[in-house]
Length: 342
Ligand SMILES: *[C@@H]1O[C@H](CO)[C@@H](O)[C@H](O)[C@H]1NC(C)=O
Ligand SMILES: *[C@@H]1O[C@H](CO)[C@@H](O)[C@H](O)[C@H]1NC(C)=O
Ligand SMILES: *[C@@H]1O[C@H](CO)[C@@H](O)[C@H](O)[C@H]1NC(C)=O
Ligand SMILES: *[C@@H]1O[C@H](CO)[C@@H](O)[C@H](O)[C@H]1NC(C)=O
Ligand SMILES: *[C@@H]1O[C@H](CO)[C@@H](O)[C@H](O)[C@H]1NC(C)=O
Ligand SMILES: *[C@@H]1O[C@H](CO)[C@@H](O)[C@H](O)[C@H]1NC(C)=O
Ligand SMILES: *[C@@H]1O[C@H](CO)[C@@H](O)[C@H](O)[C@H]1NC(C)=O
Image 1 (cartoon, rainbow, N blue to C red):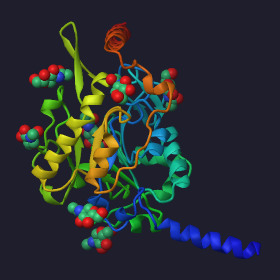
Image 2 (image 1 turned 90 degrees about the vertical axis):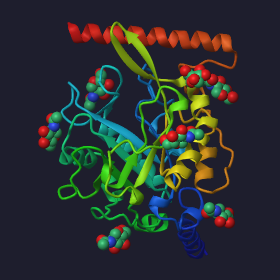
Image 3 (image 1 turned 120 degrees about the vertical axis):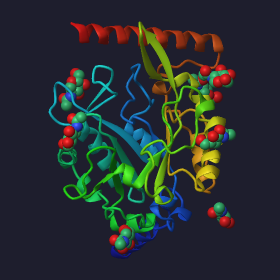
């Protein structure tokens, strides 16, 4: 009896494994490059700071449905490996890469029907082997690493990736070298990006920005950058900061227009829809439209942190919140300059 029940459950588990891929049965038969993934810009930058790009930690992002993570590899003064920092570690320091990779590994273990992508912005100019060494320190992650043959633009289906267990795809913008580290793909061989340096939603476009003039744009996937910066003048220096107070606009109608425009301009939906503060706006509604699946209402309000740096509905309170944010930004930057000068 017990044996029978266990077998039935095991069979049910096997069947379940192929019932839905990244949440939807219809995505199982699609190739990896035919699917759209909501991607967080600077996924690690969720702690309260002027350099904050997200409100929730990486595990919450994955639980909510984020399937692309953009991470910055930076050199820090207290660690010889790869540190996750927003440009400089004195602006925002999220600790070692292997800590965050460990979070991703345990999430993948608990979520066997999901395919996740990591893209590295290699600001510290690390070698591919140095990145590999961080992955080796993150328990269990090596088992999930998918390898695409170099320069091959034919990707497996999500179902095939899930069955094989190789469901973490990794890219790096600088210094990728598949001959030494086969699973760390060169981003700009397989992916191009639309312009990222926007300060107003009216600028969000669909041109191929990086790399310039790729050889096979039609075969590549693409990142649609859908976030805006605000600029802060400190003396003669202009500093770009994330814009939490604009996210309800940036991530709603403007996001949908942008995605619809890029689908038409580039002939296919964006693969990686990259956003700041993904919990504001209608991010998953737009994602599901791109994937031609039915949006199921989900709550992205996980309490206290959802309001960090924010305030509630009334515009007066919000204006105060924004003023406080700018003051905090100015003070932090002054502190950084003092640190740099002295
Ligand atoms: C380096 O120091 C920063 C600031 O104290 C800290 O946040 C970070 O976790 C440290 N990095 C490592 C790898 O210990
Ligand atoms: C970055 O690293 C590569 C490979 O190690 C090296 O050839 C190159 O000179 C480095 N670039 C900079 C700006 O340090
Ligand atoms: C390209 O990759 C796909 C999927 O991994 C594979 O089926 C195919 O055989 C590869 N083609 C070549 C020429 O390596
Ligand atoms: C963006 O540009 C539009 C049109 O020029 C303007 O009305 C709007 O205020 C701008 N938004 C921001 C956040 O500056
Ligand atoms: C669509 O994208 C193109 C290419 O970047 C741009 O020129 C155009 O202004 C965009 N249209 C809209 C409606 O945003
Ligand atoms: C964004 O919209 C939500 C829902 O309408 C609202 O609760 C929240 O306060 C808004 N956030 C900002 C920063 O305006
Ligand atoms: C969208 O999905 C429906 C079924 O849900 C299908 O009939 C339709 O062909 C799909 N559209 C595209 C563009 O794939």
